[in-house]
Amino acid sequence: MKVMIRRTPKGLEAYVPKKDLEEMIVEMEKPELWGGWAKLANGWVFAMPEFDEDPQLPITVEARRLTTADED
Image (cartoon, rainbow, N blue to C red; front, side):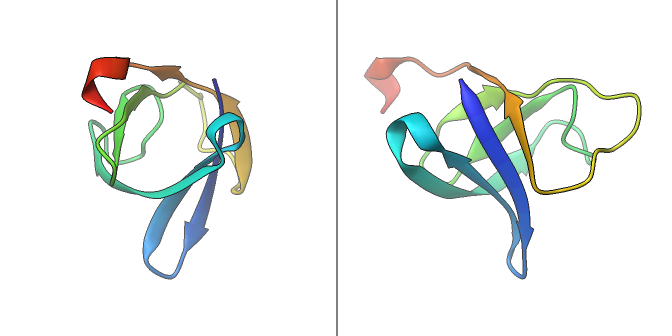
């Protein structure tokens, strides 16, 4: 699923165009975000791609949603 990540004054924010969903990232497996999971304020969890070096933000990435439809 395509997810756009950007930095805001409040922290990192994710936008999922397919769902027209914009939520803050509230928890991350790794401090640098990449290569682990990221949890959004609505409870969705995404597996984030790994990068050798932190990319410039904003960036659109292909992330896999780890939560199921039952958990919406």
